Structure formats: C-alpha cells, structure tokens
Amino acid sequence: DALPISGTVLYDIRFPNAIQREGEITVRFRAVPAGPLVVQMARSSPGRYALHEFAKNIYNVRATNAQGRPLAVNRISPHAWRVSGHSGTVNFHYTLFADRADGTYAGIDQTRAHLNMPATFAFAPSLATRPIQITFTPPDTSWRIATQLQPTSDPRTFRAPHLQYFFDSPTHLGKLDIRSWEVTSGGRTQTIRLAVNHTGTADQVTQFTEHTKRVVNEMAAVFGELPQFDYGTYTFISCYRANCAGDGMEHR
Image (cartoon, rainbow, N blue to C red):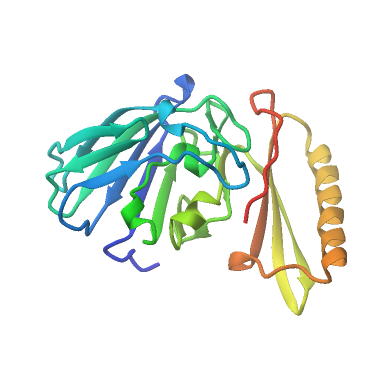
C-alpha cells in the first residue's frame, strides 16, 4: 500500500497495561493549520441516541510536536483540550480506562479489547473530513482483529475515509474464531464474516454461524437483495464472555 497522504490522521493504540484495563493512545495530526488545535472526545455514539461523557475515562493527557517536545495543553471544557505552539504537527497522547465492553463503551483486559471508536479515540473537529489510518498493537500475538475498517497490507493497520466512517466501525481484538462465507445477490458476490470471542466450543460457533447465515438470507429475501457492502465484506462482531455486557448495536 502507498503511504498515507500528508494530512491523514494517524492513530496508534497499544495495551502495555491491559491487566489494569488501560490502553495507550497516540493521535498524530499532521499539516495542521496555524493556530491552536482543539482536540476532544465525543459525547455520542452511532446507534445510541443518548448523551455520554467519554472524556471521563481518559487521563495522562499530553501533547508533543514533531520533534517530541512538549506542547501547551489547556482543558477548555470537560471533553475538549486546546493545543498551542505547534508548527504543523500535534501528537496527542493519553491513557484510556476501559471496563465496559458493550455496544457503546470500550472494554480492555487480558482476554480482549472491545473498542467502540467514539468511546476510545479523541479527534480534532476541524480535521474531521480527513482520511484516517490506525494501527492496533495487541498485547498477545495470537489475538486477531475484527473490524469493518478498510484493511491494508499490514494486518494490524486499517483505514477510514473520514471521521464519521471511523466512528461507525467498532473493532474487537482477541482470540477470535472467524468464519466467513460468500453470498451472491443483486449480481454481486460478497463475503460475510462472523468474528466470535467466546468460551464455548468450535461446534457451538458452527451452529451460531448457520443461524447467522439464515438471518442474512432472510434479510436478502425481505429487501429483495443485499446491499453493496464496503470493500465487498460485512463483518458481524460477537463477544460471548462473562466480561462482555449483554448488548447489541447496529452499525454501517
């Protein structure tokens, strides 16, 4: 893959302290216009029509320039910061505490990282239309990544055309049992994926897959065809563990 264009917003998330349910996140804003840059956490999430304060779960907020030198950071509201003194690059660093894996929030521990994007990642409203590239570094090399984000040649790196798409693409990392099959509808052949993080058996996932196929087929029958999925793939993400809250959420 070609390198991202200069204005692409670059995200990086690592989990060196997953046992304490923490993620370490860096957002690199490049080609930033002159003047202070406002960075904030969202207060809403796709599909969940209620007000949230995701900023309450982040701390150790700091910013550096392209050379790694500290930049001035002032908190201007409970969910926003103003970064001053940059010369076109702002590296925004923070720690996320994530202890609720459900359809809205995020959950991190030694078994999985369930990331709803608005609850996890800060953003700059003035740069919301720029493309995004994100790299996930799992704490365990056996973990796999399930997401609707655009894949790249690096299995840990994904892209989104802009912030709205990024925020509507929840991502789950863990020891996933991933099943896939092809569906043909409307003259298109596409791939459906079911990514399951579970404590059951492979046979149970096989049964679950067969049920999911029936749901997909019924949807095609009701609407007459399947939609054209982004990148030719649709991904179901399912977590059946005691540390995942009972919840479900629709996304693009």
